[in-house]
Image (cartoon, rainbow, N blue to C red; front, side, top):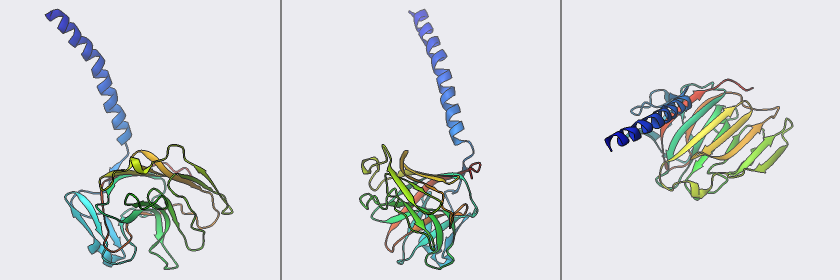
Length: 244
């Protein structure tokens, strides 16, 4: 009997050790190139826009907290302001109702209409609607602000003409935790942009426009309204080779 058990254990070792090694290697490959954007204690490496909105941002228990004090768009902007192609991962939570998101390729709006022009991966509380939660917003001076709601794949032609298709198996409200933590992933690769929530594609677009197309810029976490609260953690960034 002892010999039999020794044989069983030996077989399990031969089977499980390579599997565990493969799993660790796969995880290491997945993590390769990512750097943390947040030290879990301070807002070092970030700045507020407008500058006087810094009091709306704080760190509590290893989490970045945005608490809207007035009805205006405010952002917490990451230090690298000329990012081109990248992957961004984070977790977010809305304890109550709110409208937020992650601005990418953000540059100062020359018209003064809003703090930034650029592309905006929209987040909000569960039930706010597909035009916000999981949608892309387009913040420009002169260009059309296209509709790219949750579940939409959008292509913008050089002349601004658009084509949309429905994403098969896009993220649904039932995939998102109300009031709890959800993961978000934003990918900017060449002219193609993807927005994932909890591992499922929410919306995507390809911007081939000749005018006002954004190639690089900053990343900013947004507060949209007074009284709302949004929380972020596990923020990490991987710069990737340009596909432009």
